[in-house]
Length: 463
Image 1: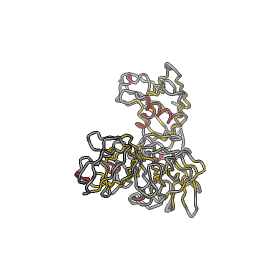
Image 2 (image 1 turned 90 degrees about the horizontal axis):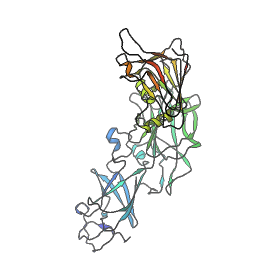
Image 3 (image 1 turned 120 degrees about the vertical axis):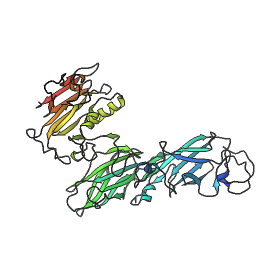
Image 4 (image 1 turned 180 degrees about the horizontal axis):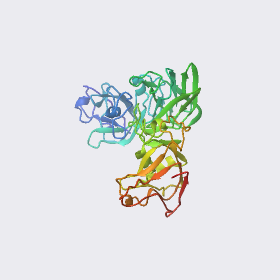
């Protein structure tokens, strides 16, 4: 590749045929039709870490953000100003006749490059948090497509972790929260050593720092699980506490945990995992849930993810979780979520046969039978993950059909069980809720073996 010549504003230049063309008498970036215009995007949308913003603002670069663009012969910095990227000084590049490979990274801070990054551990201010949002990009053999734009598809290299406090008693306060992370990248690989990040703290309106609802946001270097490395450290009631075990995280994802302190033990929930730009400080739309169990109430509670009684899912979410999807990828993902899990259901009436259809549960594309246990009879006022408040003589969990539905259209059952399912119901009631004059009929279950695998149903103490 021939030498790339950087242009100096308002300077006379020699004529040449370089990879980046220099055939111009006066170099003025804003007036030069041959100047390389930079457009930096990720997942087709402008995006960066804006923890204080919501909605579309979370997807935008901020005024004054800076990235560095490099090629074989040098580098230039570009600043985001007025909705576009411009060189930071009098130098810029022009399109030439030869293909050129470019690389870029963001943010431009000490020690950063397209292969190396040292994670800032003080993220207590918004600008510090943004400076941890490391992205890189390589564009091979770039040529002008007529638009004069060099499109940089920035790849996020970091993950975002959000921890929200729950079950802090009385006026007690959690202090000094830190979140564990790998220390960054060297030569494109995650380093093996870890450090503790001081996170950005958000206090809910009317709340107090260190009490329930207070959240801690940190941008961390994702990597393999580290069983001995510290994931959370904090001080509670004057005692320094540590929770080991950094989980395996993936770049570009947001992981939202509920953080609790029980006695001298720190615990975190299974994470709600979402795309970075759909997660928020208060909680994001779950893309995938890998919970140890699911909790269900007649009315959804909290963030309705089902991670505990305080965030119990409602009947619609339960139906969607169990229901076979026409998209096999979705069904297989649900199979992974459900296999080997228990579903705890509080007392109430749950409309399973709805809109002329029962729930079809089948995982034909899954490699093995999906084993699920559904337990009813729990006190609706249960909190956390407390399973002691179960009294089947007092609390009735009933699955019913909609009295407005056409029962004969439910394929014979509230639950229609097909391939690769082994489901157990304990202490549940199945009620068609028929009145005199109703047409059609429906059973609690329709169980059949399909083309491969079997449908297995077990009922224990059910009505």
